[in-house]
Image (tube, rainbow, N blue to C red; front, side, top):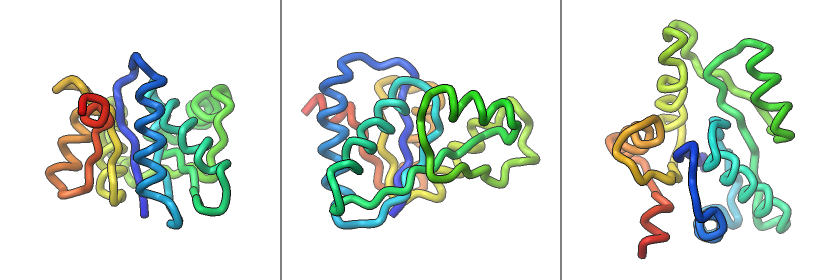
Amino acid sequence: MTISFFGHAEICNTQEIEEHLISVIKELTRGKRVELFFGGYGMFDDLAYRCCRKIAELGEDFSFKFIFVTPYITENYLKNQVSIKHIVFDEVVYPPIEKTPYRFAITARNRWMVENSDTVITYVKKSSGGAYSAKHHAEKRGKMVINIVDKIEE
């Protein structure tokens, strides 16, 4: 199973979001080997990573591989994105987007993440932006999409 995460760069009520996110991830992943795709931008990505690390520490019911999917292959970008945040990934993947113009690399990377995932977990409140576009693309591709915003508003 492969899960990708997309959400807004800025979020509030992180405690409530964290509770729902942990619950959803546990329910989806218990007893399965799971690859987790992270883009590494913004507050939701950081929160999703921390939640997955907390779950992974719970023990053998959870088997996660943490993968950073980079839109850029430059050494400086990778050093800043992965090292400074003190986030540890098991693998760094550069999707086949090398012919994509630099300014569209993140969008191309997000599409690749969606297309190579079984499930997409989002935190999308607005109908614009990169997280919204990734969520919309996942829905069009028939992926399982779980928007944490919907869980909070239930």
